[in-house]
Image: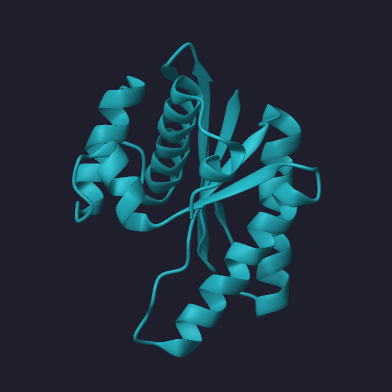
Length: 169
């Protein structure tokens, strides 16, 4: 199974792609969709098109995305939610299943603690995927989401969990 991980942001959206084969997670690709300083609707279009281009090139079958977290700034939270929606729409528009995970669940699956910092996530993603250098924080978070989904999916498959348990939020 090929998994697309998405770390949404209104200015920088991290994207990571991994393969999950025989209980192993294998690195495929990562990048950042960086939007230019332009009006917000155009930035959302750039996010949608950037994610759609990765989907077209690498053909993932499922997507994992961080769920929305609470923010002290309502305006920032709204923009993040809209960026997240643009990325999710790119996946759903081609029929992909999208699985949502809390940031703490992703960190726990990859680092072992739900309160890991960005440097710890980057380091563990690099170790788990055998990367020669640390990815930037945005694609590292996206790869972490994909790894977390691969681990949850593998566990569900092993224990024969029904599909409703596979769509963790």
